[in-house]
Length: 492
Image (cartoon, rainbow, N blue to C red):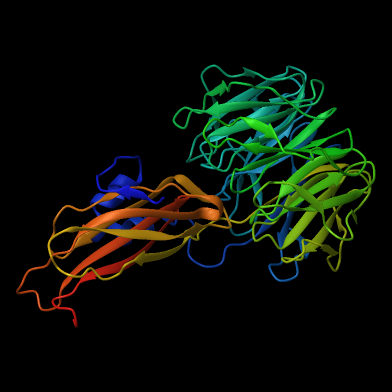
C-alpha cells in the first residue's frame, strides 16, 4: 500500500531548499553546478605499478578511443596499485603499495593533467592494496593488506588533502585487498584475501568513522579479491581466486549480506576485479590468468547471474583492473603483462563486448588498475504523476492523492538521503512535505492528503503544486512539478 504523508519532516541539506523553494530554488540549483557549463571532458587513468607512473587519456565520447594526454605518463607514488576519483572529477587518489601511503592529485578539468596535492602522499598502513572514494566525495578509504586494517580519511574539499579519521585504522579481515562503498554511502565492504571473507562496516555520514556491522565478516570464496555493488545497492558480487563470483543480496537497512541461491557462479582463471554497469544490468569480471573478461546479465529481482552469450571476451595479457565509463557504453582493462589497456563497447541490450577500433592502447610498465572520470554536472532525472489530478466535489473534505514516479542518475547516482517532496498552493497555506524512500530502480509511490476546497470567488479554481526534489552524489539538484486542481465548478 502507498504510504500516506500528511506531516512535515526535517532532514539535512534539502530542508533549506524546501523552505525557500519559490524564492531561491533557481539560485540553489545554479550553485550546485560547481563545474562550468558545457560538456565536460572524460578521462581515463591507468596505474603503471612497476613504472611508478600514471598514464592519462581523454576518452572520445563517440568511439571510446583513448588518446594519451599531453604530459602523460605523470609521476606517481611507489608502486601505484589502485586508483579512485571523487564524483566531481576534481581529485584522484592512488594506493601506493611499497610506500604505505595514499598519493593525491588535482585533476585539471580542461586538460586532465595531474598535479600533486600539497602534503601528498599521506601515511597509510603496510602494502596498500586498494583505495576508494566515498560517493559523497567527503571520505577516502584505503586497504592496508599486510596490516589487515583499513585507513579512513576526510577530504579537504578545497585542496583534496587527506586527514585521518578518528579511530583510523580499523581492523578488517586477514589481508584486505579490495574495497567498495555502497551507492547509498552507508556501508563499506572489504574483500579479505587470506581469510576468504567480506568485512562490512557502517559509515558515519558526518565523520566517516567505521563500525563493523553484525554478522561481519561474511564467508566468500577462496582468496576473495574484489567487491562490486549494484547501483541499486541491492546486490553485492565478490571476485574470488577460486575462479568464481560469489553473489549476495544486501540488506539496505543493515548492510548485511545473504548468499544468493546458485552462488558462486563460474568465472575465468584468477578473477581479480569486478564492476557493475551504471544501470545495474551487467556484471563484468577481469580474469587475470585466462586474460579475458567474463560478462553476466543480472536478474533484477534475484541478483542471479547468467553468462552473456560469447562470454568470456578476450583482453590483453593478465588484466588486473577493469573500469566502466560513466555512460555505461565503454569498458577498459589494465593488462599487467602486455603493458596496455583493452577497450570495448558494451551492447546496451545484451551486454556483449566488442573490441574498440585502435585497442589495445599503450600504457606504462605493468599496468594494474584503471579508472575513468567525467565531472558530473547533470541533475537527477525525475518523472512524476499524480492520481487523481482533479479533486471534485469541492466539499472541504481531505482527499487522497497518489504521487508516483522514478528518480534516476546514471553518472554519480542519486543521493537517497536527499530526496523529498513539497506541496504548495496560491493561498499560501501549510501543506505536506517530507522525505521520499526510493524502491528498485529509483521508483517511488506515496499518498498525500489534500483538501478538496477552494474560495467561491476563485474562478480559476485552486491549484496545488506538488514538487519533487532530488540531489545526486555530486551535489546537483533536480526538480519536477505537477499540479492538482480543485476546479471552480465541475466543468472548469
